[in-house]
Image 1 (tube, rainbow, N blue to C red):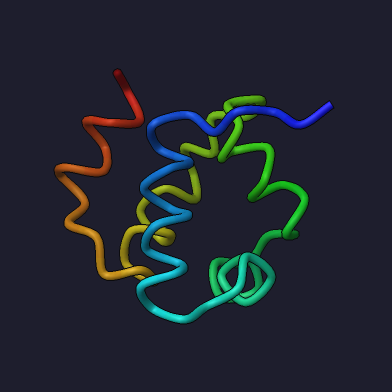
Image 2: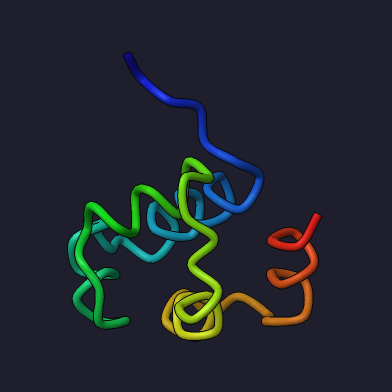
Amino acid sequence: MKRDLTPTGVIIKKRLIETGKTQYQLAAEVGTSSNYLYLIMIGERSGRSYIGKIAEALGIESKNFNESVSA
């Protein structure tokens, strides 16, 4: 069964497309697995320790991104 992305997951997915990066590349950049990144995107994991790194890697303003994560 395919899981729906959280609002945070949607932001990550959109920025991946805009930057031309893959989920695997982003995961490697922030120091986690692509599977764990996926779990963050669908809301199975909070990923709090990675959110800042993900925002930085994708050029997302941390403040806006953190608000969507904690919502």
